[in-house]
Image (tube, rainbow, N blue to C red; front, side, top):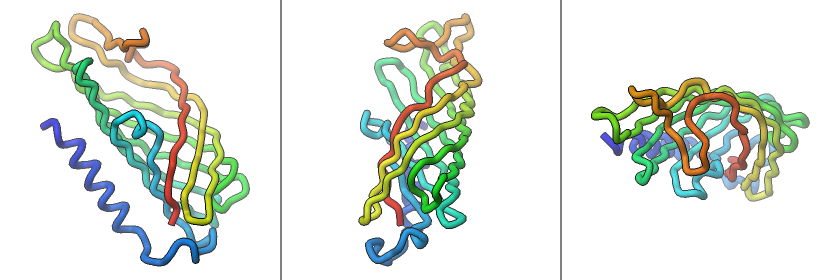
Length: 187
């Protein structure tokens, strides 16, 4: 069922938008804004990504989760995944310098030509990051981040072939950078 990940993503978006308050966020002070909907950078490149966070402790901590679906038809490859993360804001208020840790789980499906059945794998991705979030008066946010990640697992066919990409990299586990940014709306 190829549409299943997209259906899950739509359900998660529906949940997040149902949690939005009806108050005008321009009337709210920073302490009252405790939820954030984020669209991390991969959406810009054409695949659906969604994040939702809850700011706690007067903005000193954030617990966030997200989900994505990626489909590369030319490569006969797709993946669906999710992550959970925790951030600590140096000055509170859910903005400014932050550092955090996270953990992702991804289910992959590769229709490898040399094999009758698709190659299915589960990849784990513990990571850390440091970044900075800016918040404008209307609730819009921008948060670039950078850090290390470690992919546990690999996408490997029965004959030992590892999934490789156009840039020469392979899905064989190991260190990878955790670089990106997210655009969001805090309410």
